[in-house]
Length: 125
Image (cartoon, rainbow, N blue to C red; front, side):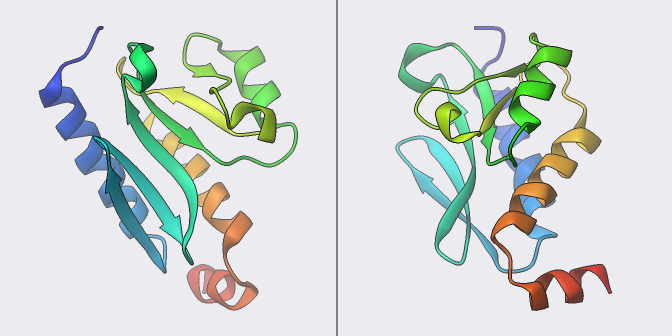
């Protein structure tokens, strides 16, 4: 693994900050991982060494075509996550100097997929 517990804590804090900007979201810690919920539904996960994969990664819901596009453009940073990959989710390696603006954009995009029209209008306003 190219990351340690201090990295996991730092990355988790950064993600909590990014997600807190999105209305109606809440974190959900379980089994050493942090999920991010909107209206009771998970739209992103921070997973640390999930089933021994060695990654410190964000799994995030994505619209059709996004996963394929990101993985094709940069397979060292993006990947198809287990279980949720077939549903279009994309994995982002957060251990190696992530592009936090890109991560914020992916989180916002996932949030918009589950947010109400009213919440989106208020957020955009």
